[in-house]
Amino acid sequence: MKKTLLFVFIAFITNSILSQETKEEKKENIKSINLTEKTSKDVPFRIIEEAPIHPNCEGLSLEKDKRRCLNTMMIKHVQKHFNIGLAKCIEKKMIYNKKYKRDELRCIGLSPGKKRIYIQFKIDYSGEIVSINVRAPHPKLEKEGERIAKLIPKMIPGKQKGEPVRVGYTLPITFNVD
Image (cartoon, rainbow, N blue to C red; front, side, top):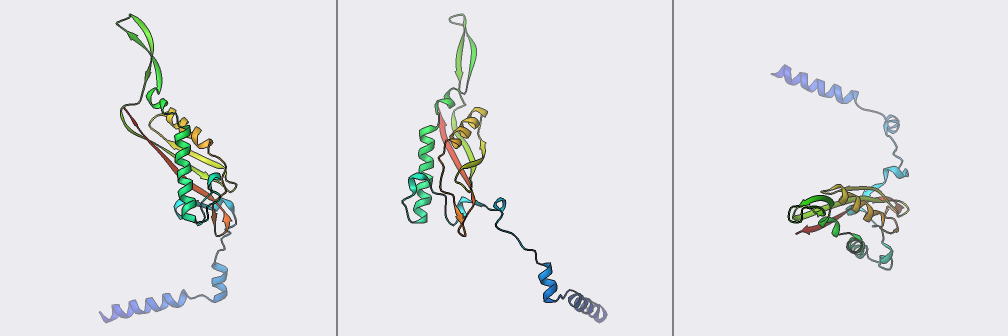
C-alpha cells in the first residue's frame, strides 16, 4: 500500500514539474482572438447591450423602452402585413359538385386549430434584415413569413461594447383557424 501511494505521489510531482512553463512560453501559447471581425459578432436579442432601434422608437432613452418599442412595432408590422385570408384558402382545387353536376373551384384551408409561424432573421451592421429563416405548417405560409420579414424597415443596428453587431431576432406569428 505504501509503495502504491509513493508511486502516485512521485507520478504527481513529476507531472507537475514537467507541465510548468515559463512566462514567455505561456505568452507564445496564448492565441489572440480578433474581435473586430464582423463575422464573429452575432449576438442574440436577449443579451445584446444596446438593442436595434426601430425607426419609430428613436426618441426613447431607456434601453428597456427601446426593446419594448421594437417588439411592439414588430407586432404592429405583422398585424398590418400578414394575409390572414391565406390560412382560409391555402390552395384552390377543382372539386366535382354532385348537386349541380359540374366541377367547381374551391378553396381548401388549413385544418382548424392554433397555427404558428416562426420567422428568424438577423439585423445586420447596417440595420438591414438578413438571413431570413421561416418555419410554418405550409410552404405558402413560409413564403408569407419571408415576405413579411422583407418588408421590415431598416433600423439602427444593435451594439455590443460600443460596436455594431448582427442581432438575431425571432418573430413568432400565432393565429387560429376556425
